[in-house]
Image (cartoon, rainbow, N blue to C red):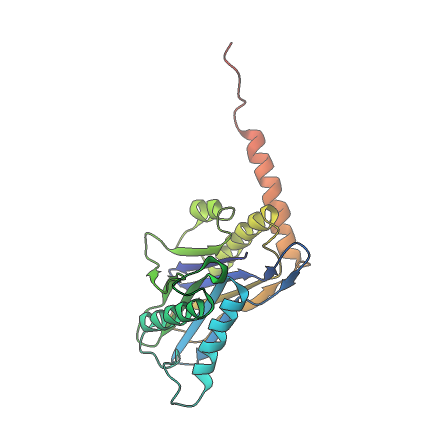
Length: 245
């Protein structure tokens, strides 16, 4: 399992993904789940994956090969005319990989399933954010649905729903995501540090801040401890419950 969030803001896009993979309680490791392609001045493409590791790595490898291989190997996400077309290509590639590994007649076998968050911008068009399903179809973020989560979503969603503001700065949104991830990590052992993140400013056409938050990061520790103490303080200030006489 994993946890990834892609969020649309007034000033651009922000992404965060954990790095834990596991195939049982005695086989825990780290793998990168946030991937980036960039043609400076033309396009920035970010992709995050959740699900079967072999499936997601195959999808990323195929997309990467088609982007770097000779011109006869198409379609390439670095040549597609729109983010919509890139989403279609990523969805089709995901569907093909799953079908190649699943049993005959199955289109999205759970054993090989995966979901993807795709975001970015191509010159001349606005930034866009998509959620791609194992079947290859997808939906796009909107004002009513401004962020996507994949993987272990339930523990980190409440704070996003309550505190998200499209006008927030990247610094505030990164803090919000840290709280969301910390809540998930404390509730599910299949999600863990380090966390990879990336910000993207609208029309920059180059990545913004790209980094990794390790277990010994002092700011993350301060957010984790502070959020826990704030929750306890809020609980203590709630009215006391009394049983009816």
